[in-house]
Amino acid sequence: MTHAAPRLHALVEQLLGVPLPVRVRAWDGSQAGPPDAPTVVVRNRRALRRLLFKPGELGLARAWVAGDLDVEGDLYVTLGLLSGLLWERDEDARGLAQALRDPQFRAAVRGLLKMAGPPLPPVPPEEEVRRTGHLHTRHTDRRAVSHHYDVGNDFYEIVLGPSMVYSCAYWPGPDSSLEQAQRDKLELVCRKLGLTPGRRLLDVGCGWGSLAVHAAREHGVGVVGITLSQEQAAYARKRVADAGLTDRVEIRVQDYRDVGDGPYDAISSIGMAEHVGAEKYLEYATVLRELLTPGGRLLNHQIARRPQRDESTYHVDEFIDAYVFPDGELAPLGTTVTQLERAGFEVRDVESIREHYALTLRRWVARLEDDWARAVRLTSPGRARVWRLYMAASAVAFERNRIGVNQVLAVRTAEPGDSGMPLRSRTWN
Image (cartoon, rainbow, N blue to C red; front, side, top):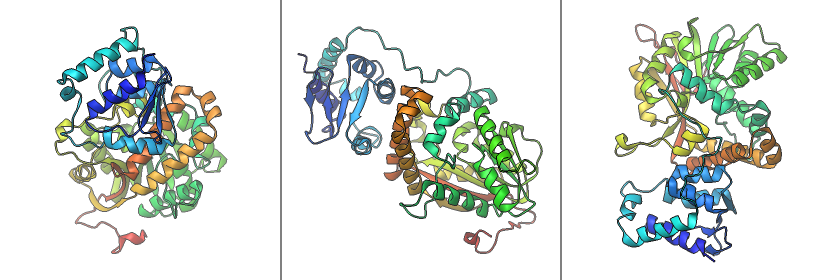
C-alpha cells in the first residue's frame, strides 16, 4: 500500500507553508487531514500526474473537468476553505519556487513522481480551449464567444431559467424568485437609461434577447440587439417573434465595431465588456460614444477585479481562461471609469451590486444540480463540471469581495455641457 493521501497532504502543506484545512482521500483508500472537514477525492494516479505536470490552477482544473478530482461535502465550504490558500494569499506568500529550494520538499516530489505512474503528461480534457492567433480580433472574439455561449440553448435554459438572462440579477430580497430578480434588473437598466417610447436602444451583447424584448414591450423603444453567438441570435429572434415585436426589435450577429447605423439614444452593455480586453477597451468605449446622440446614455454593467499592488504581475485566471471565458479580462473599477472618461464620456453614476451576483450564482448552481443528468446529456460530463465549479467558485469570490460587479452610467454630454440628467439622478426618470 502506498498511503498516497498522507504523502499528498504533507506535500501540499509543505508547499503552502500552512495547514491544509480539507481532508484528502486517495485512490488507494488512504485518507489524511481534519476528520470533520470536506474531502478532496483524488480518484486516480492520472490526477496526480495532471498536478505534477501542470502545478497550480490549470492542473487542478484539468483534474476536476476530467473527473479525476472531486469534492465530497459542501462545495461552497470547500472552496471557501481553499480560497484563502489558492487565490487570496499575500503576494509574498510561500510558493513553488521557494518550496523547491527545500531538499525535503524536492525528495517528496520525486517520490510522488514515482507514484504517479508513466512519465507522460495526460491529454487535457476536450473542453479546454486551444488558443491560436492574436487576442481580440474580430475572428478570435467570435471564436471565444462561440466557445462560451454556443453550447446549446437547452443547457442554458436549465441554468438560467425562463428569464434566460445571463448576468447578475437585482434582488428585492434573498428569498425572491430568480425570475423576479432578473425582471427587476432589466427594469433597473431601462430606468437608468431613461427609455421612453420612440427612442432607439442598442443592446451590445444582447444574449438571448431578454432586455431587448423587455425594453420594447414595457418602454416602447426600438431596439437593435447584437451578439456574436449564432445560437443566441436564433433564440432571441424567436422570442421577439413570439412576443409580436418584430416591428420594433432587430437581432443581428454583429461585432460592436461594425455597427454603422447610429446614432442611438441609449446603449446597454450588460456583461459584455469583460470580453473586450484591456488593449481594446478605449476603442470599445470610443466606438460606443460615437454611436450615441448627444445626451445619450450608456449603461455599462461589468465584473471588476480588485487592483493589485503591482499591476504588471497580474495574470488571467487560468481555469476561466482555458474552460469558461477564453480571452476574457477583468479590470479594476477605477480603470474602467478612467477609460470611459478618456473616450469622452461623463460618468454620472456607479452602483456596486456585488452581493446580488453571489445570490444569482447560487441559484444557477442549484438549478444545474437539480437537473444534472439532463445537463450532462445536453453537453458533456466535463462541460457540466466546468459550469458547476465556475459558478460556485465565482459565488464565493463575490461573497469574499475578491471580485465585484458594477453598473456604470455614462453620458455623451451635449454642448456646452448639458447632460440631460435629472438633478436627483437616482430617481432614474
